Image (cartoon, rainbow, N blue to C red; front, side, top):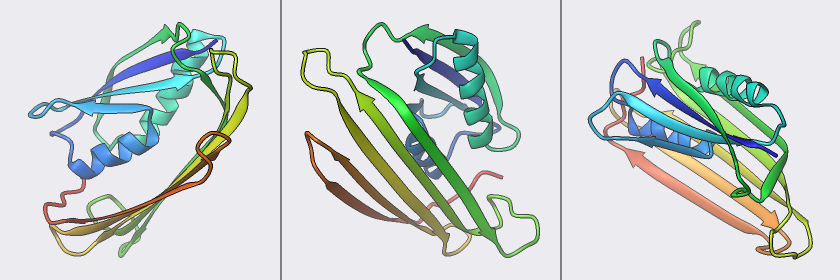
Length: 179
């Protein structure tokens, strides 16, 4: 059994593309309506207790959102069998390297992020169970006040898809990190 935990976050200002990309990499679903200051996040958690699921996702969201942002809504619903994967292990890490002693998103020159997921999959159609893995490593290098280079590398492996590698390089000429 598991829960889909839905969070609505209210930011100080509309989220930047870089923030939405980061949230999309950290969570199962991250969406935003253009022109608003709110972001919706959905994360699936495989635990038996709804309160534990909400508390776990609250901690993940609080770690991921910029300072001054507020979690305005946090609810959970049972997954009703729509998710066939149960997380076995998930790890994520993020670091900023800054030119000052107190790094903030606006003065950091380099962001490093990583995520590893190992899932045990039990297909509903009777096929054999299997394990799938996914790794994402990403970095943002600030090139100037409004320019950055985003580097994203992804790899995944399972018995059905075998190995997959993807690399993405984005030159962002409208870079505006959250304060």
